[in-house]
Image (cartoon, rainbow, N blue to C red; front, side, top):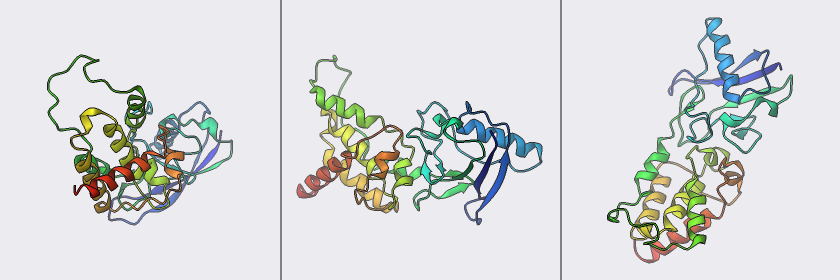
Length: 247
């Protein structure tokens, strides 16, 4: 395959960025998108040019590091992580536009790399269980209804990639927060801090500069883990109950 890449290049956070165009030949349809970028960087190195900076780690769709906007879609045309997107999703001669996540809360560090520390700070604001639950009990010691356990596991699959923020026209992180609230709220261990958790995480969400949710649904449609949109309903319900309780 021959493809043309239009890639956002930005030397550092304080520098102005711009789209740069590169031509790439001999791209295998079996390559992942990141392997294709590796091939581009080899070409740039051989030409004495600065390689394109992008984030990746596990390259197995688990860590969430590899998020990119590809032709205006978070992670590209397939609902998966960028590292699991393969070049067979494109055609010979295609022009592909590659950008970093676009959100005020995700400042660009360099090229396609952004600072997603805002997600970590929201977890630090309440997305955990600190109540003393004692030593590890027998598996059946604390009964959890199967529906609640399934719901908790579903929400816990969030990998924190930020695709929900990048896909949302408002740059809201409500799907991310909703997943954490739902995950812990469905389990007995999460109940003691249920109210303070949601209040703390929502306050941090707003302080970080994320936008408000208007239920457009692009977040869930782009989520590689297919987190359902109704976790945002659970988030709103928990917040309302916490405020009523004076948390």
